[in-house]
Image (cartoon, rainbow over all chains, first blue to last red; front, side, top):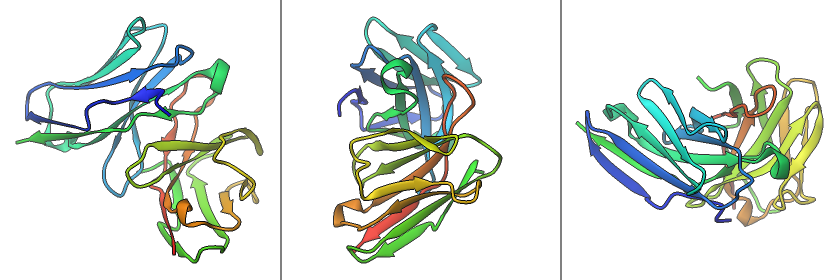
Length: 114
Length: 114
């Protein structure tokens, strides 16, 4: 299932700098997109979401951008902190075709160095 | 603190045996989901459950799987005759009320089939 893809398995940034995590999707019926963070031995924790009627949503240090024409979304974390080090998953759903089920990407391991 | 509690955290079972994984929501919700993540693979949707009925299921959710909410509180996933390939992390999630609401995950049950 390649409907949601995160092409970078890992990303390393310095504390205080911006982290940019990317996600691409192929299913044009997706209309709701989410980012989750996952620490080892824990479940995915919801971070931020965006619906397809918007192109940007911001919550504190986290901003999600959606480019529908490119079928691309990104998560910006600024400033990055060492506690942000985790695996980040993007996920998508499309109510009309697949209901509320989430389709996940592979995840990107973010490491923020002090 | 996760919004759903999953038990057990780790289950080791012989192939062919039945297992029951449990999920207890912190507060009353109507939408529940089960996902699994095989080691090194994506998080995959299994089934969604709304108002005590299955509302959607994936092709993975075949006849060996079942879900129920036996006492109106606990939400269980039963695997009738386990196979080696059922070894995975199983995550329960609860959904929000209405369209385009994030799902909130428990910390998962690690299922190991020997």
